[in-house]
Image 1 (cartoon, rainbow, N blue to C red):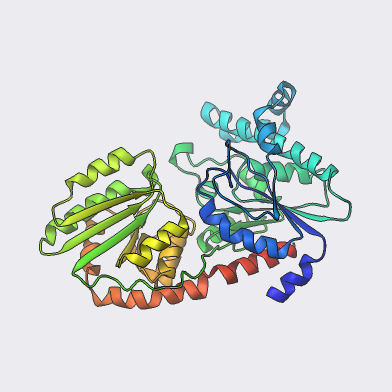
Image 2: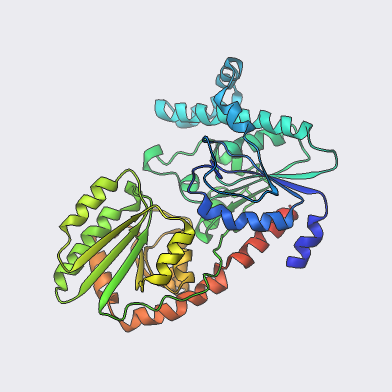
Length: 415
């Protein structure tokens, strides 16, 4: 695979990647830092075009990557003419017929199409400045307005290729947006390839968008170079890593942990949470209800490097994820790469990792009592020791960044 990628990369291939805000302040660093290394090895030029920027970059990227902030500038200065033209667009009017008289959804559809029209114009200007004969792949990291903009651009620039990843909320939607993703069928039917980051996502697209060209886009993490041995001092150490928002259900986990600690008074528990977010005050306040045999550590936001340092120093026994819906979380892949078994809800990549031998499953919508029962069952059990041995192999066979990103780049080069 590596040799093939090298040969094709000499064929004047350029790739233009649209993240939300990377390399500026963005959680996309967790996803993109490893992938970009492989894109650089596979394409003659890599352009990074964030839709949102700040005064300075938070993350360093290779000097070989061309970061273009022109799209961000254009999105801040959308002309009145473009706003009116979007209102009169046939695509927008058709979408209104689908959503009915729901003002919030109509506003969302308008906003997405307006931003997409700016992306379309940006791509046209970009192509005018590109030398003839270059084969260009436009790639959106999320199924968002940039994806729609690429599809619109392809209608007038037939020689370009357009692809997108999709993960969680950009595939399934969520309660906040009434599970509504504007123009989803229009986009999926026209992309050269859509890459969901879980097998569950691939099955979902194949079922509901059968005309789409979908392929597995499972990501990966590199080898950390160490194994977490687990606790040897009688303390059961649990770690979680999630943005503090309602769909992550961190408060529900606290309630389950509280029951487990109360019902196991002779056991000692430690819970470490990595990540911050809007519910920080509520969650940290809830943790104060935990009994005295359970100690909490809120680590806030941490880089991947910082997380790996924590994992190397602390003998964690279990990684927990109680999210409502997921693709394949990087946090779970990082955990099993270190030899930390998982306890996760039975959805998407969570379910796939556990069923391969990475750990134990909760139901898709668990109760606090179910969470407590699982924690009690796994605390010091032989089953947990077996998972410690098998989860590392699951990472090696299915979530190794080197293998998965080489395969992904080879697919991009042969679209």
